[in-house]
Length: 330
Ligand SMILES: Cc1cc2nc3c(=O)[nH]c(=O)nc-3n(C[C@H](O)[C@H](O)[C@H](O)COP(=O)(O)O)c2cc1C
Image 1: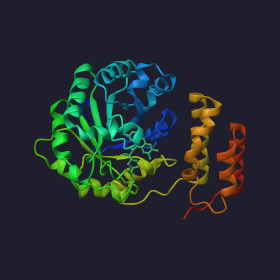
Image 2: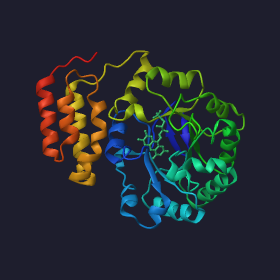
Image 3: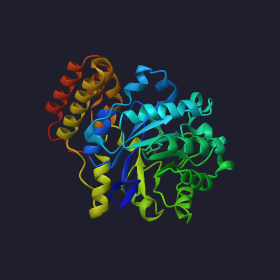
């Protein structure tokens, strides 16, 4: 069993990665239903939270059914991060996660996200103070280092553990790599193999098949996998990995009827949560994957991603059911 503080998780838990405009309550709930053991919100700006910016505070919403859930915050200013921690705590998540991995220029230029990898002492200080400020377990998500020449993740992880974090998720790329090349899990395994480490070490980056999840577990010895892009528009991925672990076989993919049913519920929940306009708009990015691999699908996808009104998207779902009933995915 793996534990994040008192939160008990199965062996080799699967975590939904924080993803901006993706890991919202509707999608997190779908991932949870389909086997995710822990879900994280997208990153939330500490500065936005303390200004009470509506866009940031809305991101604090959580559904009971998605627990355990971690709320992720980012920032570089100690006072703002501490104030944000108090605001987050009031939303009653199970975990507070600190983002020390975002590579985007507008974030790193302010010293936040992966920017903090250039100042390990500040990273340690911020983390330690946040841990002291909250009774919730604090976790960290980070990258291997700033660039190839400054990979100190073994030391960094140990220092963060020593100031009280309860788990660490490591994306096997440096900031300089952004999303290029392949994630390197070897330095993550080195963190896990450090005999001083006793908190769970979760691997992240490029887990996009059940075989890769198994490799992360068996060849790299990590405590769990955090999964991002592979589950966008494909929340079934978590159960597919679990089934493969249990049986060594691939679960058949969802049928067209299941895909439409989940896409429909996704859109309904999104509209209920953020209203018609945003709900329609922000669910669009999932449709490509929901309906991947279907021949001659383009006109239907176009309708889904260009319609401004949910009634038209729902109509497209109905047409898909009619046209592709019993479709055999290869
Ligand atoms: C659309 C998108 C948004 C992301 N937003 C965040 C974020 O808000 N916080 C964060 O820590 N990482 C974010 N990431 C990075 C992912 O959490 C993850 O580290 C990365 O995608 C690598 O994992 P994967 O190969 O499983 O996708 C984002 C990634 C994507 C693709």
